Image (cartoon, rainbow, N blue to C red; front, top):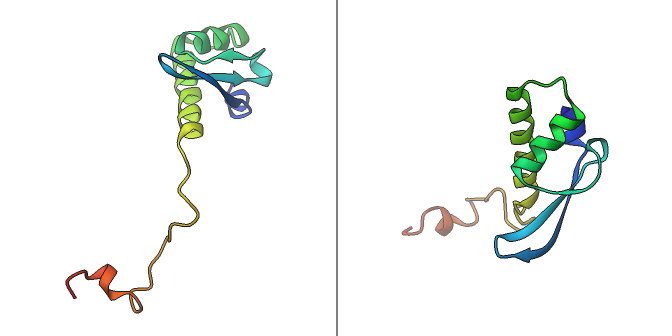
Amino acid sequence: MQAAIQAVSFTAREHDEDGPRIYILPGALGGTFQFTRERAEKRLRDRFPELTDAEVRRGVRYLESRLKEHLTPEKSAEEPKWMDWRHEPDKLFPNY
């Protein structure tokens, strides 16, 4: 199940009243479906009948966390990840 969830792709379609409609392109989980917890749970139960209820819930949470990660914009590459305080002391000590 973990490998199947790691292999999914996501695509966003037009917005509705609840926001963007996110579709899962699942590969090993069957055909494309619009993400809801209920649909993801049903899909995991259908594809992996040997899973317990707790394992299915864990799988849905994992899929949802992958989706949230996909929707979160990455930090801009232009933002400095470090600062040379020797050349810019006013940024480090604004009242200097």
